[in-house]
Length: 79
Image (cartoon, rainbow, N blue to C red):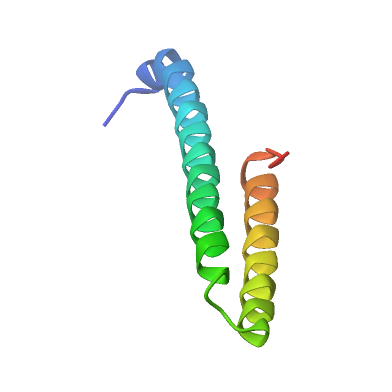
C-alpha cells in the first residue's frame, strides 16, 4: 500500500496513464467500428432488401451506441 506522500507524487503518473488508456480504448472502438462497417458493406451485397433493411437498422443502433459511449465515457466525439 502506498503512503499518502507516494500517492501525491505518483498521482500525475496515474492520471497520465488513465488518459492514455482512455485514448487507446477510444481508438480501438473506432477501428472496430470501421472493420464492422466494411464487413457489413460486403455482406449487404448478398442480402435481400428486407435483410439489408435489418442490417442497416442494426448499423444505425451500433453507431449511435458507439457515439454515446465515447461521448459519455471520455468526452470524445466520433467525428
